[in-house]
Length: 543
Image (cartoon, rainbow, N blue to C red; front, side, top):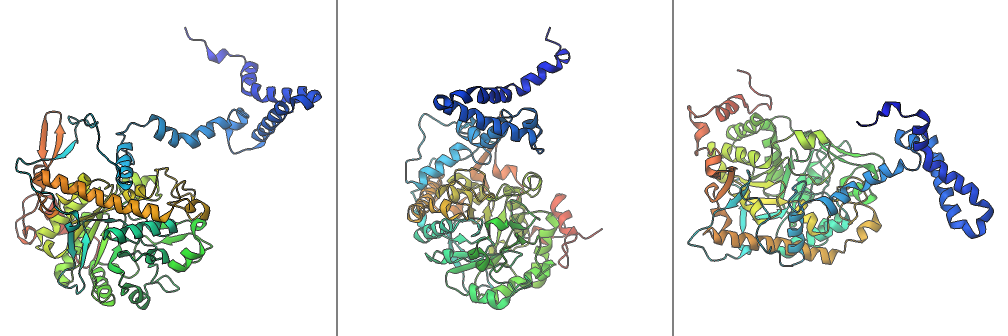
């Protein structure tokens, strides 16, 4: 029988807890007469004794009070636990946030190294959820990835933009370091693709190398705000008309923390950030959860039309992580009622996120990318608006197959944030919000970001983009296709059980053109959401 620990003598338990501390004190005192020859031992035990005394006197951590000196090991191990797991315990296929295999793929492509894998796949091809693209007996010739572009700009836009189908997603200066922004934009310039500024406005580092910019306009209106934090049309027009700015993106919500707004901690706000954003340095920089320039779907579209006019006719759209379905349908109803169309919509999945967010938001708020993308695509198709509005997709996209998987269900192009962070050296330390990023990517510490060498990392950004699109070209050729626009849901397959696979076209519902305009629509979900939506308000219509 196991020993009855309830009968363990109280004094023995006390001795066990304090034995190491007491031993250090006794050795220190006993070795003092021989200090000349035993000073290393005396010094070591004296320092440990002082740590023990401090542990006994402090009041914040009970483990250290009950186990002086030794209790500190618990906090030390907890501190390095993520590194131990990542480097020693994690499998190559452990998926969250990104697997070792995913990161290794990006690193190899960024360094222009061979990313081929020997001896077969490590994926469980019979596991539920496994996905693949079907190949064709009649393969196509490999297309030049430089032709993988999409023209963004509807009938109300006078300066359409020819964008790559793979671009850098929104990451602000402030969240990222100056050198990280420099490297990303330089790489974008080299590769001819776009760099989304994030909501932190256009910094001098975005302008330094002249890469194409998508200016993201958040609820804080950074870069175009007045002293009260409201939208300033004159400041907006001054920046939006610069040739480097190719599109304007209104951020309604983001995948990492939809409905929460954004926060840049004050310890990360430098004088440069304050000047770029137009904010003070003595407090956290907070982006409100909602915009002050509009509060209804019709007002949102009027704001889009105003920005398009102020920018000189450049493409204007919005980004959102889908939430209540009737709210997006309310925007769609407002499009029909007002006749104003956004040039593009970017759907951000809840799996996205480069910074910190409350755990409940990260885990339990927002719609994942594919479901959100499919809903937006279907709504626009059902209203005969899809051909006028381009769709972008962002959310955990790092590989050619990731790009193909969103293009097949409705996207026109894909954005990646963390993929390009890996390309410039991110090691997924998950310390983005601490200002102590070990690779200089997500920090404002001058010494830390000095480690990020811009010319080298810019080359890696260019390589990662080029090699990923080259891999996509090869996948398309194997499937008998010549351009990403030819991808359809019927080309991709998912295993739904140990004995069954289904085409994406079988798994998902795709509305027919104009379906939402008909009086009779099959199914329950889309008709119900359409009935609840109203152009005059984001509130659902009550029956």
